[in-house]
Length: 84
Image (cartoon, rainbow, N blue to C red; front, side, top):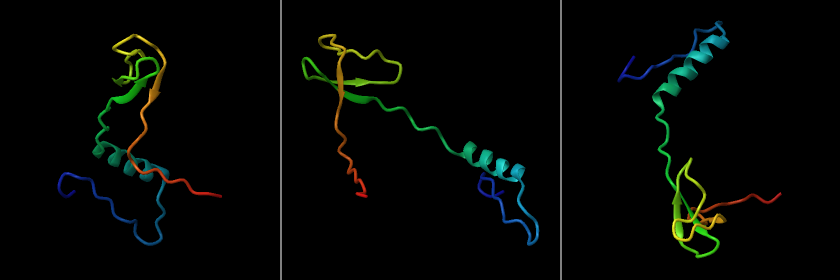
């Protein structure tokens, strides 16, 4: 092991990897990954048009007027779709 990370090498020639080997590698890499922080999503109220930050498990309701129909704010990230 180097630097606190598990390092796996390729099996010697002629030896096949087993399902157990693959599970061990997968579990080791999953331990190294940190779960992403839940960022609040921004929704726009359908009635008063104010922006509301709503996290997971928060009630879907406008903080200003209490209206329950919310629209997800459009992302600023470039989204590309392939035509078929």
